Length: 376
Image 1 (cartoon, rainbow, N blue to C red):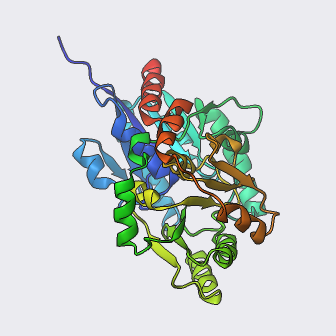
Image 2 (cartoon, rainbow, N blue to C red):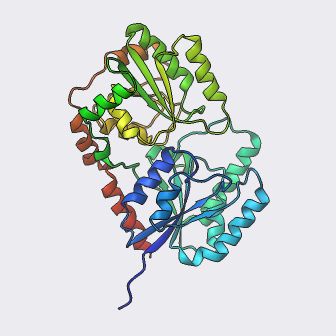
Image 3 (cartoon, rainbow, N blue to C red):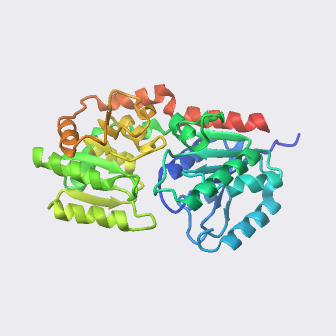
């Protein structure tokens, strides 16, 4: 009897940076039953290699390349047409994981080439910049193209779904699940990391996020400045890289110098050991202007960290008693007072709490397999 081949799903959204979408995709990729469902990827900025390239290829999955539409739009769209002409028949589904509705071409063109399941997946709840007249027109057109081209709508949270799709389009919430065991508190790891970072006796505040308008580093550093006044042993770990424009990274650096915090703020860049770094922290700070449902917020709670989120972030991220929401209208001093007195004495238990709330990757991967297999 001939062995049944796994179905193949074409994923779009993996870039050169380790961000929320990339983390979401690789978590699922790692835990899928690859005898049932295989993820392949399209790199839509093929001038750069995507993160996790080696892991993806070693697992037997494929990576296709399409030139960036920003560097060469004609070539970008033509390469998409050629690519789907050649491979569309092999795929049960195509998924566009996106922080914006300003680009939907893969979903639109996939209908022409007969891919049965065409999914738009919202991972955000706001725009990085003000929307001008031209972009508003593009968004209006894209909503109509999506209505014609998409078969299914996913979102990382209710807020992200309503923001991208509105109230009239039904969507499925797919939680940004994690491997909770990777983040389970470990005192030995904590001691080792704190020693290596020279923060043995410090009150350690952590932040994970690329340097963009969304992540609000300017306010974050102002908050930390006030915390440092309360507790001179406070240090801030900034984990994340620069994406595109370096403006927000430069502003953060200048702010740290302006406040004389050079010796107590560490810019660690993009890191692959975030689960370990979270063991070294004492609390987690995310004063973003907007988010879909931040994976790092789930990870930090699984690591047993008191978490301080801006109230613009969906309350859906508040899975445990560790989550605290503070208005961005509140002063940096008010934020600082609440953060400076935070602590958690039973950190190890929270990995289980997060898993029980349905955010463990094993259950979500099985859910995704079922969704794709049902359509096959």
